[in-house]
Amino acid sequence: MKKIGEIKNEFEAASPEEYKRLFDLYQEDERDGVKKLILRYRKKQESFENELRRLEAMSSYEKEYRTFGFVCGIDEAGRGPLAGPVTAGAVILPETAVIPGLNDSKKLTEKKREELYDVIFREAVSAGVGIVAPERIDEINILQATYEAMRMAVASLETKPDVLLNDAVMIPQLPVRQVPIIKGDQKSVSIAAASILAKVTRDRIMMEYDRMYPEYGFSGNKGYGSAAHIEALKKYGPCPIHRRTFIGHFTQEEVPSRITRRSEGTDYEHRAAQYLAAQGLKILEHSFRSDRGEIDLIADDEGTLVFIEVKYRKNDSRGSALEAVNQEKQKKILRTADYYRMQHGAGTDSAYRFDVVGIDGELVTWVRNAFP
Image 1 (cartoon, rainbow, N blue to C red):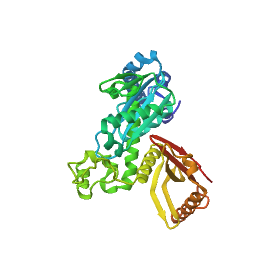
Image 2 (tube, one colour; image 1 turned 135 degrees about the horizontal axis):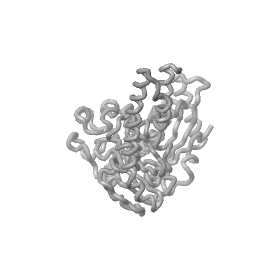
Image 3 (cartoon, rainbow, N blue to C red; image 1 turned 90 degrees about the vertical axis):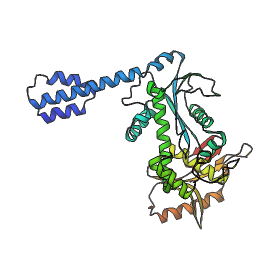
């Protein structure tokens, strides 16, 4: 006869679909410990079945519109904060997808959102995000910026959607069948998945900004107008990622007719940093300078130190962003990278590389291992 601990290990290793086999196998065992195990896992099985029924109910829109082709859920994050970008997610889930715990991002813990973020990208037919920076929000207003982020998210999909399930809005300039759903992130698995992508993407960006501007507490407030955030805004004034058109009640700074808060080059570095942070890189430095030269961004990519040059290419520019990093520029970056690695104790065998990010309008091009 198996020990109770061994039976417990079997249940712990089993999926909810396998519980019934174990119930049948051990239902004749009269030991109290085994009976308690079976009772505990029957409750878990019941909870799992309830979750499947909930997800089934949240899939009704997907089932209804799947006859038209690929169904894509869309949602946004960050319309209300005083600082940071607005982001959008777009997700096409396969017909057979079952993702336990999938729900409106606002109903989930940060840990659960992070877990589901990876599952969604793994399970989705296609998934993408759109990011619109605060200066663009000031330029065109938050509603239009939200629409722009949504269009960018859809454009980033590898699979073209045939139907868009939107959380309560109709997105202009998208020639695709659209279905606005009030509280859609609670009624559609696709919209719920999109809400998680948008939320996690934005939270990761704000965590990076917290490293740059720690006095505002962005890691905690994510740019929203908490009492501590507003107090810091009054004390220190706005930082480069504050939305000037949102903060008139809290600062005496005049909002110019055309937003010119920072130099153009720094704007593009921040856009590149947002993009890379959304891809999972950890931004370590912005505009690192030494007597040997300057590097626009330095990041960590799962243990690999990445030195990044950011290039803005206008429509009439000749050549690509990579071509703009000539040999002389490469030498300066190499010298500066050597200095940085020496200062930070990076060994000769530590992994590192040189990337180039090119920005052309809304298009971001990321070239890994751009030069040796």
